[in-house]
Length: 302
Image (cartoon, rainbow, N blue to C red):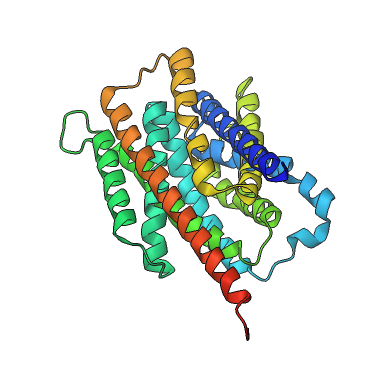
């Protein structure tokens, strides 16, 4: 019963995270109608930091102490670049297309893990990566009349996010999740302010609501996401995160009259299938490693 309850809680946390991220996409699009992408990124970081401050009340000032400051700086520089590219894509591409391409991030994580961390990636996972890239090509459609250079910005966001994910994985070996959340958000504020100042214009009217909501929703989604992954298996939770795409597609149609074209739907299905398989294989390998470690621990003479 305890295990079942834990899995249920993990699923609900991931579903909540997915809903928050989907709503963040919508408010970013609404804000982009009157505000530059650079400013939206800054306000998302600023209000996101305010939303994360209760973590300090819970853990105390010691939460800010780290011996990994250089890694945080590099991670946040890249994270800011990814955020700027991703927010631009949300503001200028059809929402379903922008979100579908963002789901190619796990493909680049697999590649980065092999090249950077030296992780062994076997043929079946490489096959899934290649299949995922076919899905990206189906959406982007290079060489056709429908090709838009803006889709490459969304792909760039996914590439950088993949590198950032590897850095987070490295940090998580020694750093608690809440420290990663608050230090990352705190560093994002000055880093995103620099480009924002080059195009500065104060938000007007309801735009304040949109940028504040982007910060709160983004931080809330991040918190629930990290907690869900602590409680449940990646392979079980990843399909739940895919719910972001239909939520965004429906809201995009209702609010902005955007229909999902056939090629985006086909490409997204291919990418999601590839991601699901990669998550399944990673979970299998993790379970085997844990079983092997437990067996070794109880062997005589150990």
